[in-house]
Amino acid sequence: MKVVLRLWLSVLLLVVSLLLGIALARPLAVPSMAGSEQPVYEFIGPVVSLPEGIFGTWIIGQTRVEVTAETQLDRAKRKLRPGIWVQVRGERIPTGLQARAVRVLSPEAVPNRVELHGVVEETSDNTWVVSGTRVTLTSQTRIVGPVPGMYGTSPVGAVASVTAFWEGTTLVADIIRLRTLAEEAQEVEFLGRLEAVRGNVWVVDGVEVTVPEGSVPPPTGTLVSVTGQAVGAGRVRSLQPPTVTVATTEVEGWILQQSADAGEWELLVDTTAPAGERMWVTVPSDTPVDERAGRARPGARVTVRGIPQADARLRATFVRVADSRFFMFTGTLTYIPSDVYAFPWTVGETQVWVRPSTVTDRPLSEYRLGDRLAVSGWRQPDGTVVALMLSRSKR
Image (cartoon, rainbow, N blue to C red; front, top):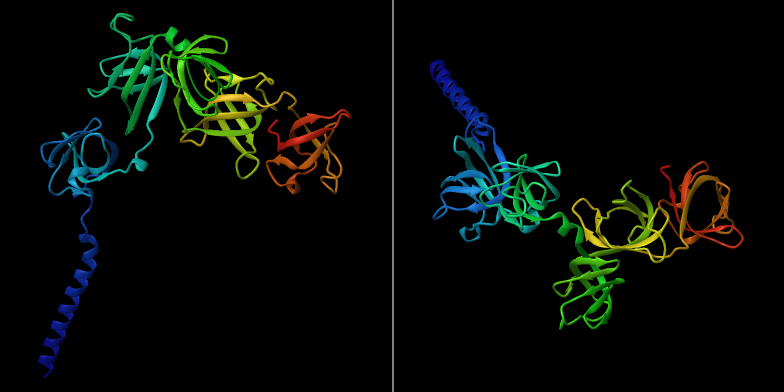
């Protein structure tokens, strides 16, 4: 009896051990993405070429990618074509990458392209330096421009507009457009509203644009895109009629500060929610700025029309100063009345009227004596100031 009992106990212990071993080993049996001890490599790029069928060597950006029957493809074959962007995971092999998974990216998931603009400083077989930035050229890079015969065999000294994308830490050029310095200086491109039509001269936000004879204008007030050559102050000659566009944003507010070269502005915006939002605006040197009502400087109220960028900045295509009466000053807040609207505040030595419509960068209750304030508004005959904007100053 004891022998039988020991035998059953031994069998039971053996079964329990086997079950524990299977349970403990199961998490370790999940295959890794790489399928080996090599680290997983992942990158995003455009499909340049595909083999016959699906399996074989793909060229993605500059990388050779081997796709096999074991590669996980999460989209149908009909969607796999040159030009689409994909995300690849796999392991390094001597000829490139062994893909374990390839995922087609939707247009929204494709990373933003990099736009460069500057002078070509150096060139080699497959690398150019454009205003200090090194870009790689491939056999698929398209070069457009009048360089041959003008710069000899080298584009050094030409102005380049580069559309590129990141492949790992390498910036790869898709398209390079070249032009001479003279052409660059005269080219004008901006968005504006059509104000009037006088024959083949269209007035777009105060700029007289000469268009080809017979051009049919859209209704006045339409937002149009203008590309042409500057032929004088406030005059542009365009080889094609301005085109209707809607890809723009318009904001109004006060200039809080400007960079030394006036290429970057910080605005206190009052046409978006929440009121008092600060926004950085990039103002290229060729952006038309209408200063008929006053100078575009800190304290001025401006209307900015432009194109939203991926970094949340606005790239200005047109700027108009709203009113020359607006001005800005800074001072220390020395008095806050108990009724913030019934009596003037004191900023420095100036009495400032705050109205319910005054745009502020924070609730009025958060302002404290001793704060340095930037005030934008207009001065009344008695010397007091009606504030249109209040914000804490960085100076």
